[in-house]
Image (cartoon, rainbow, N blue to C red):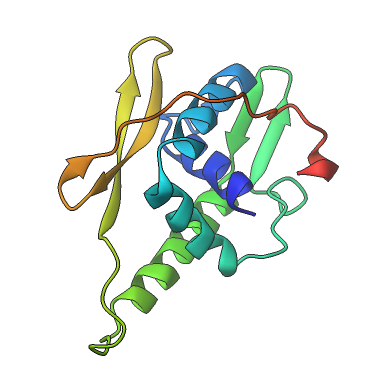
Length: 143
């Protein structure tokens, strides 16, 4: 599920791998509404982990202070991103033109002191839009 992968990316971008639920909600809201490039990137990752549950898999630890990515979560995310990158490096035919090159770099959101992966498409940043809130506090079984 691309939502859960976005949560993993947000937590992996934090210096300690930890954030409060409010900070995660804010970062996920920005990223999920930042445009088609982020959504498409997360869908490509999600195709390789269709039944992902970051909590039952032990990739994210939850407590009263917030959520924290585990070492297993970091390793899983790294392996998943490498597999998708390796797949995209295969030669393409003239019928199948290359998609936009998308990269993500952590940038600090000064208001919340939260590091967000900002999407860059062919050298230019993609602005984040505002929309409805995403309920990250929803029961883990519903994620």
